[in-house]
Image (spheres, rainbow, N blue to C red):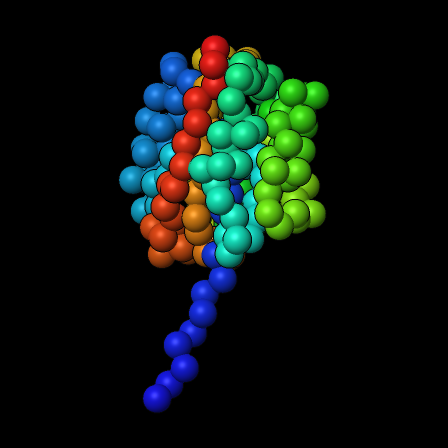
Length: 180
């Protein structure tokens, strides 16, 4: 009998944009995914990541998000990187409310990780050459300088996100909306 391979999973807490930015990002991301045969995923900013083994995401979100007001982030710029999960992305300016939210998630979590908050919203996950990424960054125009975020989701995923298969394995397991 062959031992079953255990795949370690994580819980990723996502800050999700409110309308109209949510729809704008989703349409842009869907168009990019179709054009470049890349996975489609929901627009989000990662707030915190921890081991899924002993985490109760619903309880964590209820504790941290309850009675909290929506979060606003200022767009700093559009950029690209060599990292699969940051192929082309919107970089946001960090602020105290965001840092506090991430810190509160860390403290409410069963297992505390050393996750470093870097507020960005990826527009596409795809391995591509530098020139194509640069051209994409130069071609994208956002109709806003600030984005309001109105909910936080907990997503179970494999530890490493390196392919469409990894993205397709994501499962939203809890969600809480801000009070206003």
